[in-house]
Amino acid sequence: SQQGEEDPQALSIQEGENATMNCSYKTSINNLQWYRQNSGRGLVHLILIRSNEREKHSGRLRVTLDTSKKSSSLLITASRAADTASYFCAPYTGNQFYFGTGTSLTVIP
Amino acid sequence: AAGVIQSPRHLIKEKRETATLKCYPIPRHDTVYWYQQGPGQDPQFLISFYEKMQSDKGSIPDRFSAQQFSDYHSELNMSSLELGDSALYFCASSPRGQGHEKLFFGSGTQLSVL
Figure 1 (cartoon, rainbow over the protein chains, first blue to last red):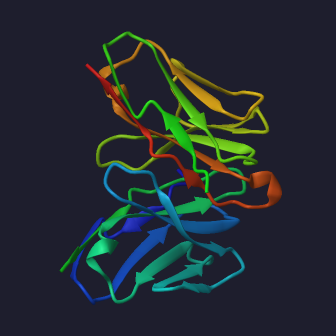
Figure 2 (tube, rainbow over the protein chains, first blue to last red):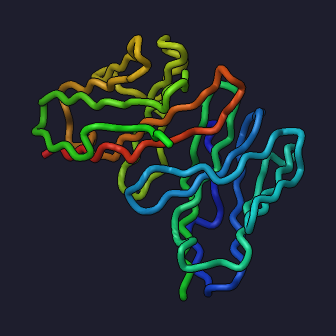
Figure 3 (tube, rainbow over the protein chains, first blue to last red):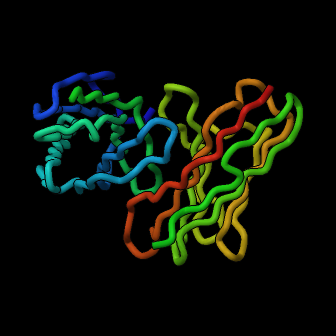
């Protein structure tokens, strides 16, 4: 499938620490996006990185993309309890978004 | 700012019944996507529409159908409901025709099939 696969599936850290989530995908993409989902709620777009970009920053978020390895990582710096949520990568093929299984992040106050 | 509106928020049905979920995209968004998310699972793409035409089809069962209307709202029709159809159904919209690829999600419809 073309789905993104996140790693790890679950991550628990202390407030103030950094959280890193990885994503691998299988096909060519136009861009790769990361979304966040609080339990039972709709997904919220966090950041988009285009296929010709290698790194992008937005506030406490840093995303990298390695198209040769078909992988991406999302780094959340100085985590807060409010960052507790599930995080999904979504490789965009130009026509479709495919979500992986997500990383469940728990930030302990 | 206007967001994607889905209705109903919760729906309880019996097996073999039908259900209709509605989605009202953000104004001027031309693309609508439907996703199904089971408990603890990732969102599974069902179907999408661009400018009122079906754009792509994912893992949508034959018992389900969807369409996008002239006002761009979309409806997901589900027939012969099964227990396994219990899930959170999300609609997302995007102004794809304007070169923007970000998805804006609604709050979802929680469907419970008893």
